[in-house]
Amino acid sequence: GLDSWAMKTERPAAKSDRLRRHLADLLVGEMAPHERLPAERSLAEEFSVSRLTVRRVIDELEREGRVYRVQGSGTFVSEPRIRKSVELTSFSEDMRSRGLRPGSLEVGCERVPAGADIGYALQISPSSQVLHIRRIRTADDEPMCLEHSYLPGELVPDDLGPDLHGSLYEVLSARYGLTVHRAEQTIKATVLDPDDARALNAPPFSPAFLVQRTGFDARGRAIERADSLYRGDRYSYQLTIYRDP
Ligand code: 16G
Image (cartoon, rainbow, N blue to C red):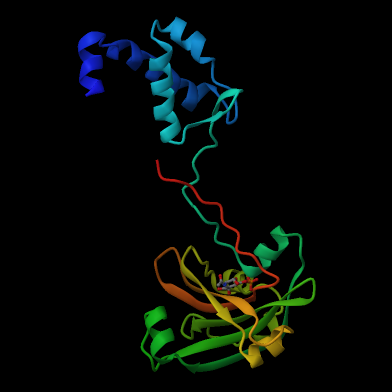
């Protein structure tokens, strides 16, 4: 094919390798994100290679996500890749980042047996106790989400009721040193049944997101299983996602 033809005729490998190494050095050390790379023409001259070769080397860097091109203005250094593709936030942090004031209405808190599903998610037996927290979460005092959290009773010995008008994650961290370090999360489309609709001040059977999260601490212990039911008319799910190189 084209490759073997190219190798036989000109074999520019050594020169294009030099160019590749030069650009790699620029990218790691000397240039900042969004800075413009030298023009293709001047790279071609400096390394005595064709513009086609320069373009191929830059194509490779573009595929790796290390540079990006802007039509008519050049090639620029990409932002460093962020490994954590989706930020793990609490409801309070999520609302604050949208410029809204987080709160809770109607906080309920009771100890119940885990049952099969919650027990499975939390890796404890169905008969062991969990703390079930039910909250209507508000944004600027408007109901936004209906949230059920289940925490292993063993890890959370006290009744948290009075503390739960603020952030659960803050309470867990301040009182027990528990931090959700990683979470498995699914998002499903659903509709609000009449009871949930009433709690959220929304029309019955209106669309909603059900977000289910199991949160683990840094040691890998499951510390929370949560179901959050968000009003579909007030909430949008916002992610920053990256393509693998
Ligand atoms: C999010 C989490 C929930 C957690 C809450 C803590 C989902 C589906 N839910 O709503 O698991 O309990 O944040 O928020 O991601 P807080 O610290 O504001 O109480």
